[in-house]
Length: 115
Image (cartoon, rainbow, N blue to C red; front, side, top):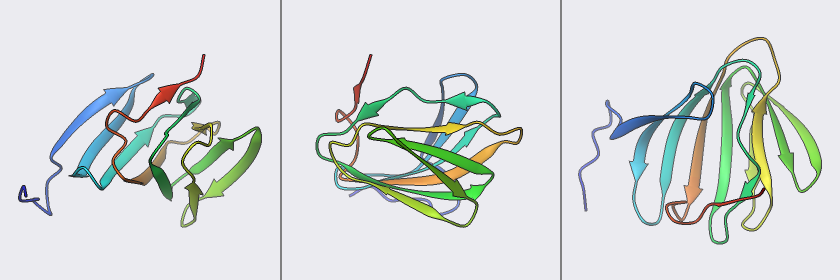
């Protein structure tokens, strides 16, 4: 099992329109990432066949769109997405959004974009 440095991410990457992610834990059974979204950004709708996810908002206000419903999640709150649910996280605000997302099992090879 790989050793995890608790003070440094394993790696980071950019996605979407200037959004960023730092991978903190990356195993077959668990993924934990810290992510950043600038104002007025959103990911594409997608689902995971196997993985459930939990989003915890550190800073800003997230808009979670899940199965056609819209949920506003403030800093200090979390949101659970079940396997198979079509969803996306968006930042419709004027300030940046920072959050942790944990996925169990990992979403590696388990992401299916819609559209």
